[in-house]
Figure (cartoon, rainbow, N blue to C red):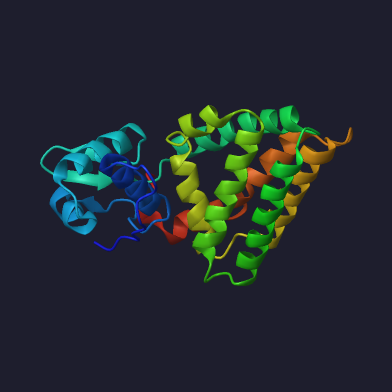
Length: 233
């Protein structure tokens, strides 16, 4: 078992750290769909007792990222197309609402945060595929800030489990070389413009968000054909 391990965040307890780390490794397919999770091994890797590991797995089970199978142990769930569809449908509805509510209300500090993020995304996009992880994480941070600036910080946190299967499908699309990072960056710049200046009358915010979040569907079937063991089909 090879994990991408990052240091604990400030004030993060062992359960929170284990949960964040395992979730990240599952979403980025470092722990691919169908892979086994052994609490003793994870305890050794993360240098902590089994108790917080077990608690983290329980949380991830509630987020549909792991399943505990009688006499077969704990495994990372396969990507479920039905859950994936629920995830991106929810995001389209929520993020178009966030965009409408925050349109024209961005303050200078928020603008500076977004501009810095766009700069980092541009730098990461030049070095793809070596920086796929970096670009995807920055993409997530962009959307997180949209929720926070739109007064939906609790919504962002509450929907992490719901969108987990969508997030894995999106990451797999990027790994397959299908994601056009320049297009993603251009659309993020448009969202920043809407949040700063307002949404033009001829722009449908929900359609804009839908186009942005579902671009992976252009190559979805070919991705399933390439990674059939990753999907619940």
